[in-house]
Length: 281
Image (cartoon, rainbow, N blue to C red; front, top):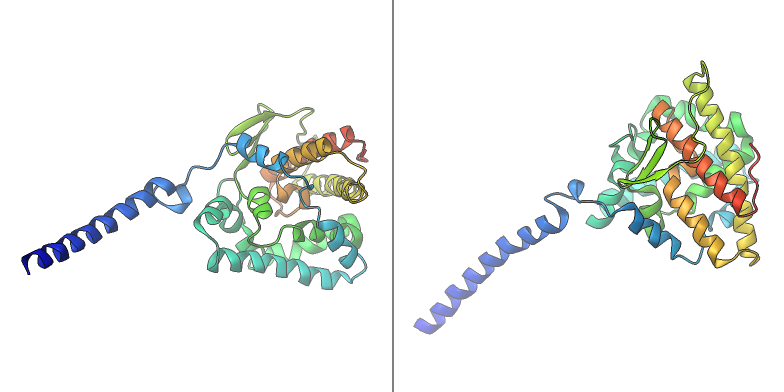
């Protein structure tokens, strides 16, 4: 009887120790909370992107074929559903690793003033964004935007690494960074003389559409086996450095982010040029 009681006491003590140890382990793994977990260095994420055999966002080519002839209003609904699917996944299904990496993208943080959660709940953004993109690049250009977004579905690893993480641009040093890993920008773009915020956004959107046209041409060439594995790796590296929001024009009209996106797009344009897909500027 004494032995059984001792075993029971030992079992209880062991359970208590485990209850203490498991949170401590989680605390070390996630640095206390999900939001403060240290992100992997940019070099590691770039390495992951370069290792992929398919161009990031390649599925957009098929999506574009499906949406390019649909009415603008229908494509707006399609875009809104993509946004809602990401918020729903983040809130109800996402694992800690996923949540940590896309937190700023969903809820805002860093230089992201309006995260995805606010895209459809902010009246000014709802009234302005879709119609402005359409006005600047037409129905076809808007279809390219929503198709490229749709290539990164909720919960996918591609969405996590392309839209998540922390990207910055320092205009003083002409340096982009991914998760704190710096990269010098060639031919950095800044504000033009007396340029307004609306004018800079227009410039970004039109450059973005020119870049997206060549991205889709690259996807088409890949589908026809006309690009090499080395070209895919180079494409993916630039895509990951630029980030999904820059590539798909998904941002409110914020001056700092507009300049960052302009430089990200310019970086992608230079890569496409070198791959034989000349971006019309």
